[in-house]
Length: 315
Length: 285
Image (cartoon, rainbow over all chains, first blue to last red; front, side):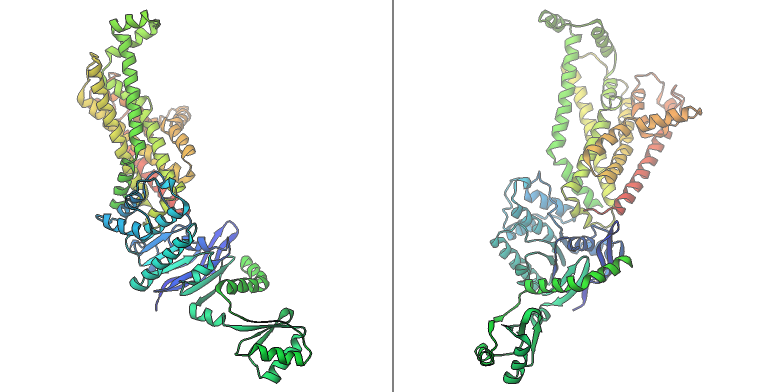
């Protein structure tokens, strides 16, 4: 698949502070790109630059192989950044109609009704948007982003304020759009469990730097099952694992933890350790999820990243 | 840009606040004319006096002056020299523009249109249309209410009246553009409204005229507020002679109308260019 979004050295400075720093992002056609990072890590700023609402201080953005400053490119992008941009004094239908008319959609009634129904809103509801709940506003924001059938969707925290049913519904809509119509998406979210159910690739950002880009398959490989073993003597236990049980694929971690990445029988391991007089404190199978992977990565980066970050700022 | 302008038209002309404002202006005219009727009609005057109302000699003089003026004078004083249209245009432009940023609706526009000058131009075009609607509606309402109230005032020279309305409307174009620039710089409706009103009523032009006047140079005619204030003269209330004499500057004011119109259009282009520059330098959110 070819790259749909490519950023090179993308940087955004606010005064002396780099909100986004030298970012080289690659989003492939057909991806649902999960964009993950802590609060204030630069996710929203990056997404704002990707849809032309903020100007990069440095670097370039190419979307569909062209510059973002081309109108033909912008017309193919649907956007929901932070809170939905809505006119509170109008109904959902009227908000949709305004967006449709600015996009030049002729006779948009049918499309508006379809999209409002798809996102769980009533097209005939005359209630003013300012009286909507946060979840309803979010649904309307999503419907507006879908107007005109975009080829690329940029959604910043789209699940915010949605109830579990709404989250499920939104996920179904996005996955269907991706699979049936080939719509590429960048979705940022703090709800990693929800994101992991739909994303095909991930970009992980920390302090404005893109730490890692990884596909779902690569992530699954990195989060592979392991057997967790905690004993009184990790070094001795490691020797026993190798010599008595022939286990080679394992990792001794700090604080006496051992992670065994190959098939092994926990009962057998416990027996071997006990007969060697090494107390076993814990032994269980473990499957790391996206959240665990993210926290692990953030932890690693915190330990190694401080000097790197300082270097960048001085550069 | 046509789509954006169409959207702006739909947005503003389907906004209740436009019609509420228009209705309140009409109410204001009605109250003013009813008051004048009370003072100018002998039967109503004696009825009001019997019921405890007091009228001074000054009121009587005002009433006499009112009766000797034309409807065109009333309209020009109400709309232009009275500052109604300047204040309306400034406030309406500031509120509707800054709202795009505070409500976030602007994100829909700016994520779709990379050329931000489209936004500036479409906003100004829409505000010019709203101004035209208000000028025409208030003028028509004034003429009708004068007739309904039974005032004997003449309409005035229709040609001069049309020219006065046209020039007044043209003079509001650079003020709308100026208001856009202030909105782009400040993005706060209250502050932008106040500054737009002050600039629109000629505070900056007046200061510059005073300073330049010390050196024997007169610059006021090159600023848009002056054109607004000229409209009563165009309608004929200051007996400045023919339209032709006005146009070539032999009107007692030493003012060349065409030069002022040209200066206003030049200011409009300058404000549009500056607004576009400011908008292109600042992030939307």
